[in-house]
Length: 515
Image 1 (cartoon, rainbow, N blue to C red):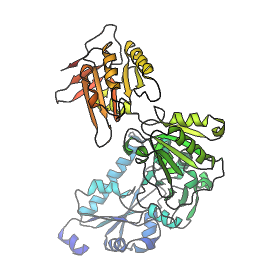
Image 2 (image 1 turned 120 degrees about the vertical axis):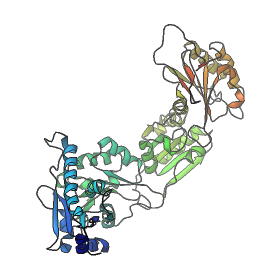
Image 3 (image 1 turned 180 degrees about the vertical axis):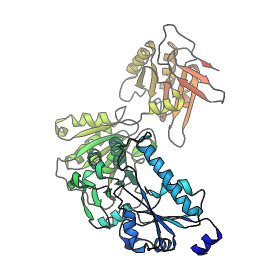
Image 4 (image 1 turned 30 degrees about the horizontal axis):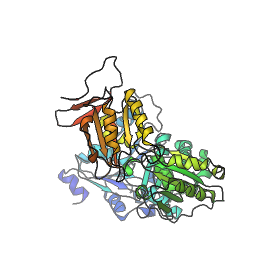
């Protein structure tokens, strides 16, 4: 049905969100050109100066008999005297703009709202869409985004294989940008202009500045590309992006002997959900990844990255190997489960680095979620007050020392997180510890058994201290033994929660399961 027939029959008009691509009119799609040509009304957003980039892209297809609706923003910065602030001023503007377009649609006119890039990708059109699409027949015409245009102009892959692309607005807080840049493989940061200084600092703080590229007005007049580090902040317009291209096959910098470093990272108790952004970034940036094979398997395989797995009982050798790689100029990530400073690899690496042969190698330790924290969170908050962390393994210290520390913690009425409670070769320590603690704690004291927390066979349950069975405990289990104040409650839905109050009362209170 032609547009005049629609108007004649009184039918409602159709709304189009038309993606125009990144700026070059030659990159408009055939469908976009067709829709503009058939529309009665062409609408476009602009700043108060009246110039519209969207209109300039589509200018060759706008006819003299088109009805033009210029949707002029009342504000372009967050400075406004509107009673609702910047967001209130924009919401009012979008509502009024949608009402203007609705008049045309109600009159049976077809309305094409022009949008740079893609209409639903950080585009102004989306605000019209949300206010009108539920009332009018609507079609969105996708367009080439500035992200794709920037990658094409740089002539380098943006993402490959299993890499993750993160797209960020430069208006995010600087610390948030830093964390996300550190954690991702590839990235594009949009909306630069006045945000550029903070964005550049975020790239530098995340260690990604040497990789970062800069693209300004891709495919448009005045296009400029270069390294982000060399870009003059005073020259950056809003229509510019910062790009972290694919790392796959990207040349790794040549490093001189002595220019390497060792970063000891904690992967948390299980898989990638427990990694911090800083740890993700360190693992991605490493030339070599070193660790106990079980923990190394948690780290994604990356092209060009060397992996060195070994047995769990060669911590000192592993540390020396990592330091030797770093002396030769390699960036090395040493992987630990949980937190590397809690019964893990940080101590071994630092001990080796403290020797004369390793004193010249920079060593950093990045924290991770501990097994105790993970199990406690699953159970509730049993570590809510003072607690002690003790390993039951007598491989590196005598049992007499362990027993003395258990008695001391029990006498002090501390909650205890007991690591390494048992293994195939150590089967009696849990029973000995239970019996010793029963000399100081009520039989009803809650004990949380957290096994493989965060993993596929996760199991978290709570038992009375008197009922703790050593056969239920293995090397993948951590025990949290409550204090005299720890509470254990069965709720109406059948679930159980365990917590230790932050306030320590003067008088003792009951501690067994209630409810």
